[in-house]
Structures are given as C-alpha cells and as structure tokens.
Length: 520
Image (cartoon, rainbow, N blue to C red; front, side, top):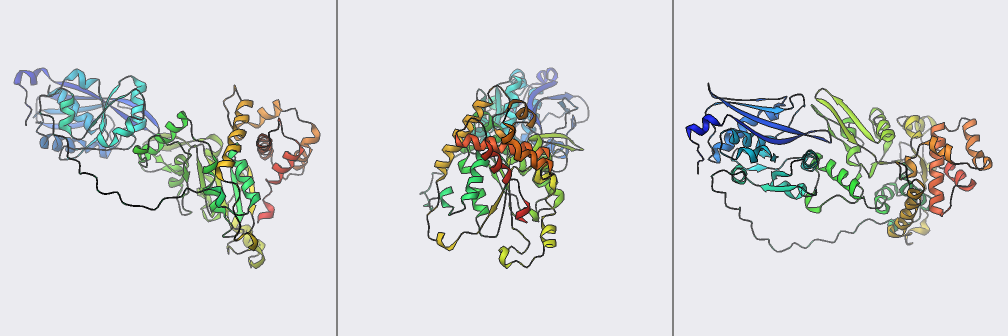
C-alpha cells in the first residue's frame, strides 16, 4: 500500500524531526535528527559530522522506503544530525532519518515522531536490523527525558533491561510508520516456525575449585585474591594447574550488584557479545586473550572512534593472561594505566572514548622458555632472565600476589580435591563484608582499592608489627608502592581470619607473596 499526501500538505510539511542516540565510548548523547524538504533539484544530503557508513544511510533509506510503499518526496532532502560537533557513526541512525523524512512529508504524526527515539539499521527491503550498543543508548535516552523508544525487535529484550522505558520492538519500516500514526496497513506479524523436538545435549558441568587436587598454597592465594580484589601472578611448570586455578577464580567471586551488572552488560552490548535473552550479566566476566593479541585488541582501538578491548570486557571480572611472557612487551605496558585508574581513555582522530576497566589481573607463566620442570631444565639463568624481561618491573610492582605453583606428587593422582567453590565463596563473601563495613563512608569497598596514604593515616599499628616491611623498604627489596600493596594484602588476610587488624603473621605472609626472584 502506498502512503501519499496532498499537495497542500506537502507545502506545509517542510521540516520533520525525530530523535536518536550517538555513542562516544560508553557515553550516549541524544541526537536531534532534522529533515528539511526544499524545492529544487531532487537530492539527498546528510550533514552533522557523519562517518562513511552513516553517509551511506541515504541509499538504505531510499531503497527501504520504496520497498515499503512509502514514497520518498521528490524534493531536495537535507538531513541534519545535531549537535553537529558530535562525531556520529554507524547505521543506528537509519530508522530515525527515515522517520524524520516521513514527518516532514506529514506521512507520520510530526509531534509523535519528534518525541520518539528511533534506533535501528534499515535493510534495502525495509526490514529493521539489530544494532550494537542498544543498552547504553536506551540508558542515555532515558537520562535525557524521552521514554518512548523504537528499537529492532531483536534488540527489544536487551532494551527492556533498562527500567522505566517504553520499548517498541519493530521488524520493518512500515511497522514503524504505523506506530507513529501513518495511514498505512500494519504488516502482518511474521510467522514463527513451531519449535522442533528438543535436542538432547550433554549437561555442562560448571568448573569448581574442588576439581583442583593439591596446590594448597595456590588455592590460598586465589582465596586472598578473591576476597580483596588483588592481582595475582602464578609461575609453575606446565600441567601444574595454573590455567585451571585461574578459570575457577570467578566461581568464588560474589555476584555483581545491580549497578555493576548494568555497567558490564552495557559494555558487552556495545561490543556485540551480549546474549540479551539471559538478562543482565550477573556473574563476573572472564576474558582470556591469546598471547598474539595486539594492543588494540587488549585495551581497545580501531579506526575512527575506538571500540572496547579485552580489559573493558573484563570490567568487574577477571583478565587472564596465560603464558604472559609470550605477550609483546609493548602490549603488556598498555595495562599499567587501567590497572591504576580503573578506566581507559583512548584518543583517536575520530574522538576520545572512555571505557571502564576495573578488573582483576591474573597472569600465568612457565619458569623458563622450555617449559620443563626445573630439575630437567637446560636453560641458563641468562635465558630465564631474558624470558621474563617482557614483564617490566613497574608492571610486576602493580601485582599484589606472586605464587609459585609446584608439581603435585604422585600420591595425589587418585586423591580427592579440596574445598568446593561454594565453601570458599562463603568465606570470601564474609571477608568482603568485613572490609565493606570498615570502609563504610568512603568510596571504596575492597582492600585493593584503598590508597596507601589512607591506610597509613588510619592504621596505628605497633612498630614491631611493621618492622619486616620497614626493613624490606630500607634494603630496597620493595618500593613504597609495593609496601602499600603488602599492607592491603595483610588487611585481606586479617579479614579472612576474622581479625580486627593485621598482625605480624599477616605482614610476614603478605611480604613473602611479593617475592618473585625465586620463581625465575
């Protein structure tokens, strides 16, 4: 069915508006989409700092309107995306551009179109295709006021994760027009094939810390890391369970609260890795990039406005670097800023993007390039030092816990594992509650987040308790930054033990876990 308007209406209808959202990093900005119809040679121009994919929207919109029976006005069409100073990219503006043109031609209700946020990419046949970043876009739209938001049907479940929004899921441009008051017949709902017989799949057994046999020292380090949010470095021969331990760290971490779950879900929405049918991401994410990963893959990047990398996808979770000496040294150095700041600021010619990146870093390495046990190793000390040379001192100085993972004895081959993840997770939760209670009224909730200056001002410890720490600083074995990290780990150990404050035992144990010389 073709929607037409009278000549008088075309004269009156010269300017139409709709709304959309432009994302710069994780920040969403409401964009006013204006379409102006002018007399003259027919043409279609998009202004307002569009990128190449957005400039191609004119061809997608023209074809989609034609296939939907919505006649494109034979006028000079100028579409402006305001504010013009904001970089805009992607195909998310297609639907809003089409709606603004329809509103200018009075095909849809101009007032309703001007107060509706439209997100989605148009296919040449008029279908509305899903886009990335719907969750942060809807959150930004809600923060700006409008509550009616049109999204692709495939993104509707994701959009409804934002409370309070009126979400309208659509499959085609014709359906959008009908929703906005056009005198068109709404398309019939697409037929859905009946579900077939369920396919039997083997039950997936979740990883559990009980799977780890032996490795009591490494398990203890893992528990401390989980309780205080500390970074961990494990060194040991192949097959000793380093990867197995790292994969089970997330099983002893508590669920994300509502605020953190929305943050994490929004990042994965922007990256296109979100399964919206599962709802908000409640479990801490686990990212394990390959050692051939580039700096852009690790911290984010790309042409134009940068995309989030593995460190942002690991936000509020774990970033695991297996065989860490195999990573390029330049790539590893990019981790220093997010480890300290908890966020990434990436500058590109297309703009500046900020992504949250507060993660727990877990690194694993063999003791030498050959990967054999130390007794059978033929590598010289020079070869071993060269192997670890990519791990700079400043990077290792930011890692709180260093653990040697020894080979297990033959007696443990048929033995049972240790405590389950559920039992350890309960102790971790109790320790985190103790830390949160102590830090009430501050901006921190974990020991790893507390600045050293704050600890020194409020911890009037007996000088005898801190004597090992003072000696290590005097001898140059550790830096002041490392000393602060030792104190944080000691507080976490005290929380796990149910003590009011750390004693000499916790200081000695935390200091011992800073030693890396014996691992090389």
